[in-house]
Image (tube, rainbow, N blue to C red; front, top):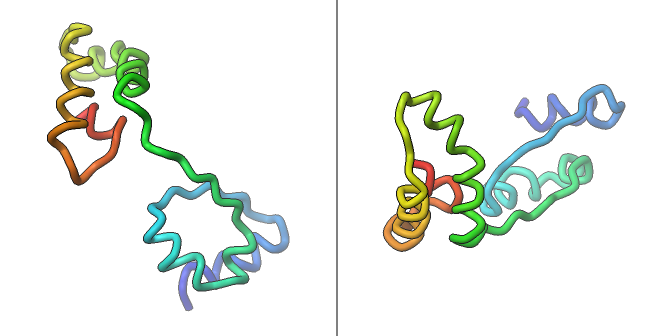
Length: 100
């Protein structure tokens, strides 16, 4: 028995509420192939944010990163992280790759 078959009864009875995150390829491979499981979810497609939006996100996270890592980050460092990661890191997506 796989995880989908364990979850379906609880989802159908409303005993379990769930939020998941996956790639489109994984959704197609694991969720879409099981119509009964797929019916219990409402997909929300999220596009990759722009470099400008990523800079704004990083600015919002700046204090947390500084406190956690015991460092100080300049605004220029945040702009460079977003800009350069968009250009050179090809196997990940913004804003994640801008915060590496």
